[in-house]
Image (cartoon, rainbow, N blue to C red):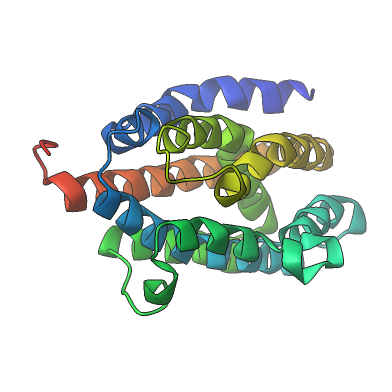
Length: 231
């Protein structure tokens, strides 16, 4: 692993831990959310799930070379089921929504302001920022810890007897594939760590992405339980 990337991972760990140890994610991972709260979670996460391929595409469009773009394109291909529409990650998520009887509401409900801020903040970062900020956001600021996040989510969802293994495939798939996605992104970034300017761009994108992710999870907490965090 490139020394700068390794140091950045360590630098970001306190912020990542704030996300992974957020109160809402703790409730989700312990399986203590009610059925209605799970349905609301699905609605909010669907909004991000729909946007994620657009984040990858927006970032890839600004990358100037094939080598750096390659990891983004592979991730995007995976998101679309590697050419099999039935394996698209949106299709897998809909299995989860169906188990919660919420699929008809996914495109009818408005996202929370915090969810909207997270998604559009990420899209602006990927579309309008320097490409190194975008790749930094999606890699060290995203895929680096996504598998940890999904393990917590899956551990909680598996506690609900009405959720079958098939309905949880979306979460299970990401635990394994996101590790590979991150490794490929980190390798592609290694050639862009030679100057302080490049390193600063990567670092800034990663910090911004994690801050936006925290907005999403704290927003779920506040909407579900109020600012006091009491159910």
